[in-house]
Every structure is written in structure tokens, then in C-alpha cells.
Image (cartoon, helix red, strand yellow):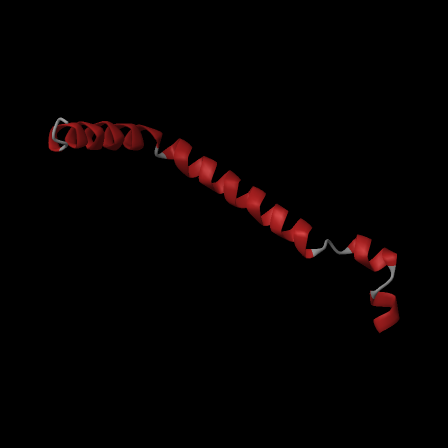
Length: 61
């Protein structure tokens, strides 16, 4: 059974670690995209207020 596991058919049937990592990365990016879409309005408001606070708190050179 160890010899059959190292055959080309088995390696093609089961994706390798690189393909598994790529698949996981794509899924994480898709989830991140959905989260950023659902919280877009809140993110814009908080980003604008934090930028305004930074401009007020930063002393002029």
C-alpha cells in the first residue's frame, strides 16, 4: 500500500500541500471580501473619524 500511495495517480487524486494552501488562501480572501463588503459603511465612517482625529492630534512641523 505504501508503493501505491507514491504512484502518480494517488498524487493527482489528492492535492498536495501547496494546492491545499492555495485553496485555503483563496477561501480566506473570499471571506475577507464578504466581511469588508458587509461592513463597508461602518469602515468608511470610522476611517474618516480616525483620520480627522489624527490630523487634529498631529502637531504641524
